[in-house]
Image (cartoon, rainbow, N blue to C red; front, side):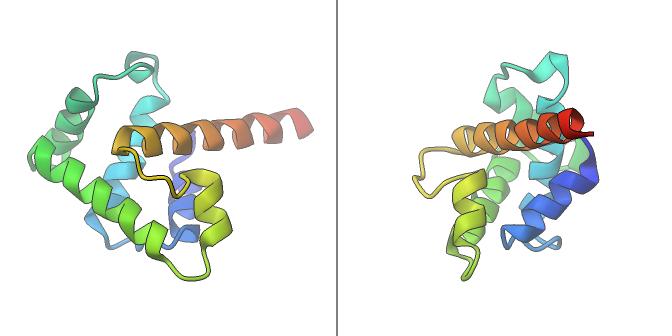
Amino acid sequence: MKKERIDDTLLSMGISAGTKGFKYITEAIMLLDTEEWRCPKWTALYNKIGEKYGTTWILAERAIRRAFEVARGAKGKYETVEYYIGFTYTSNSASLSQLYLMLKREEKNEESNA
């Protein structure tokens, strides 16, 4: 999955590129797209992200949660946010999983239409 596609999607959801969670979400989606992280232990995923960016897994998880909260509160982004992560807040893992699945579905549709 291309990083640019993930970044564009996050921006379209109202998450600013300057938000710490932005880069953490991008990294999480990139990791989920590898065989090693298909069925992750979420704490281990946050820890991997924290190690890469010099922070703790707790702060990485919190930044991701905050970025999703920002997206859900973005005015005028309702349909986009509903499509990619939904408004029913359950957990970061559910939001990351849904975001990954929707991006993967779009990627497959584009490949089949090409």
